[in-house]
Amino acid sequence: MIAKIGSGKSTAGLIRYLFDTKKAKDHTDPHLVASWDGFAPDPGRADDFDATKKRLVADLDVRVKQARRLGRAPERHVWHCSVRAAPGDRHLTDAEWADIARRVVAATGIAPEGDPDGCRWVAVRHADDHIHIAATKVRGDLRTARHWNDYLIADKELAAIEKEYGLKRVVRGDRTAAQRPTRAETEKARRAGKTKTSRERLRTTVRQLVSIATSPEDFLHLLDGVEDILVDVQHFPSGDVRGYKVAVEGDTNTVGEPIWFSGAKLAPDLSFPKIAERLTAVEAPSVSQAGRRRSSNPWHQAAAATERIRHHLNHGDDAAAQAHIAAFGEAIDVLPLLAPSHLRPHLQQAAIVFERATRSRFRAQQDQARALRSAVRALRTAPPVTGDGSGLAMFLDIAVLVAIATARWHQARRHDQQVAAAHQALVHLQAAYQQAAAEPLAALAQRQPPARTMERHAQRIIAILPDHAQQVLNDPAWPALAAALTEAETTGHDPEQLLQHAARQRTLDDARSTARTLTWRIQRLAARQVPGVQARTTQARTNAAARPARRELRRGPL
Image (cartoon, rainbow, N blue to C red):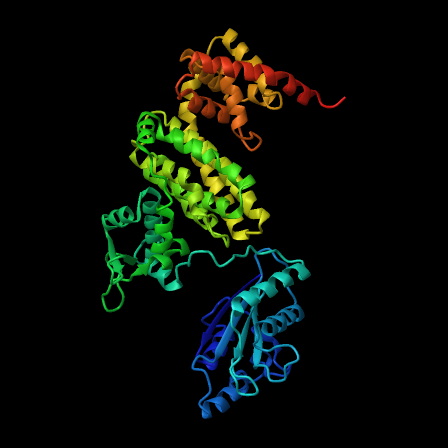
């Protein structure tokens, strides 16, 4: 059950709309279900519709006219609240809607319970699934009603009503969502034959640029270079950047001026101060780090950094966890810029819907996600995804698990909208992963090792991953995993040590295909430098010492 609240200048205009059955075809049998005193004239049940409607308007406006003579009436004196049941809810009776209306006007301060000077109001039902509450905001003592934060208060009351009436519990937000396009913006885009409003296009563009920018200055430079987008940067007298605003070229108002959107109007975290805070928290690589990164696969680095997010969600504080979720959102934002064209629709939609999951009431401790952001920025210099695309598939496999962990983190904190957004993004990430993984896994499977080598790898799986062994060996991706282990062994790695390392990295319980997840981990680990003899000897001793403990752990207490 949701409420929508607005204000207006004409009581007659609102009542005319509520009882209209000619222009509004979905208005059937309009009638009052409740009023301020229970005796308001009901045009829908009167023989003389027009006269009764005028009398109802006059009764609602009587205090407004009195206050107007004293110069105390508010210009927008009409309060309008629609309350709609969720799709699939049972049809409520008139008596139930009347109770809901009384509770809403009482909670919001329009007509507090037991207050003889409460505002005059009526509740009109002209459809099965909703009512409209029309009120005038002048009280009996001729003061204006105190109804601050009426939407939030009404929403809280409706949540209680849903529970008491056994209705569907609507997903509710925490006031951190980006502003939706207005109806005028949506209609304007539709008339122009566009699928997105200017607000939505600008939000997506800015978010993608933030995901690849390395500094606030770099962000503004990238933004200035986007075709068909106008940029206006504001400065303090000192010369420092105060903020920015953007507009789509050709999108103008009635006098031909560009329709500007500040960063804060696009989304709460896209104001310039918020962007600067995030970008100054990007880890600057040292000379030695830069050298290593040039010689390594940026997709592997991004995947490794992303895989650590789940640890921060499970063991970090809320501020650090929120920072890592925001940084993961930036990683999702950058994917449509790098992925092959056939994957972009799913990845673009994943980025759009996951955006809602990147914000909550917890203030992100941005410096906690410096390494992750640095790894994401490194993808900017990566060549476009070509060939088998194993790096992208590897990253998406981890992204699916992180999206699941994000939904659980938000759910534990009752962030309903963020949970829904993470689940929606998960669907698109899974679809993109299935497409991205098909070719590299098929290519690996074609290099399946001989039966004797397969058997040796199977014995290792059984020994190291007893809880997942049968699932792995029965998985269609098992030949690809065996090929990855064989190729790693050929380059000098110890397959047993790689499997042990891969199993220790993170839990495998959320993986839809344990074999595929292990394949990507083995490939990423095998891309590293082969450990020297001394390192392998030390690792072997450590593993040998750990085997009895693992056997005891699996055997359990006597």
